[in-house]
Length: 351
Image 1 (cartoon, rainbow, N blue to C red):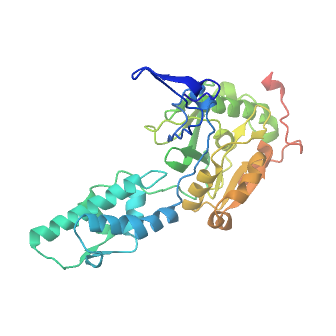
Image 2 (image 1 turned 180 degrees about the horizontal axis):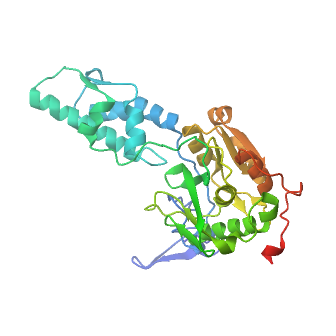
Image 3 (image 1 turned 180 degrees about the vertical axis):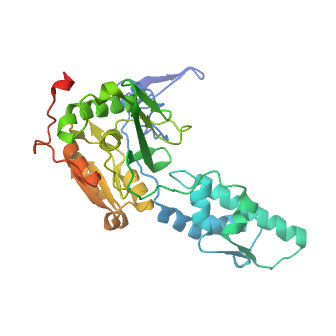
């Protein structure tokens, strides 16, 4: 059907009729490319449409979704008065999506509850005032906790940026180092690619142990546990590499990671930082969580100009090429590396 070289005589097996599909434009949509077969993707031009920003969702809700649902449920616009923070509370506490489909369902549920109240008490024309405290009665307990990423400096905790089908998220990566026999434990429902990133980050730390002031035999005398909270949510991809490496080095050196810094980028064994995807969604998540500085790969620097103006105005972006640059920005204090080139110098422990 999709191959222009063959679909001029496409045969419908049900009707047993040939069709010329060569001039047909097929348009398909999906929330994720992961489940689409490679042969199908190869025959399509992929257009990535980013999700709405928070202020865009609120504007759509105020101007379109709310009036439509009020009218659909037999109410009048002047009969429903929402406090300023109600829509924000619904969006952040009851929805996690790139679009506004679930957002509209929640608004519709509120409208139905208000219409039922009006019918029960026969109070036509009476105003219904809805505050944030009323949402639990109208919508139940919020299924999502508010973004509670701490901006305090912590040892062994780095803030990574993740791109999901629901948009961008700030993901705290925790590392614990205890006495042991060199065991590496990974928890948090991690995919194979992310596990490989953790292994690469640990190998980088071993290679730079002397320059970073880390005990050279730590990989034999200490167990390292890397955990990413929200264990029920699957996580995969290479873009957490530099965040994992930063958290590991912080835990091994005792130097805290800046709480106001988030980062994204793939790491190589020699400490190079490679480009990633989904920068817009990730930067919006950083903006939403009040992160002031975001470390990105140098290869993504050209993408910053395409970000929303309000994000560029409130977030400072730091393009980097190597992990040395990442550590200089992310750690409060650190020993100066023995090289300025940023390439990893491998100690004898690596071999």
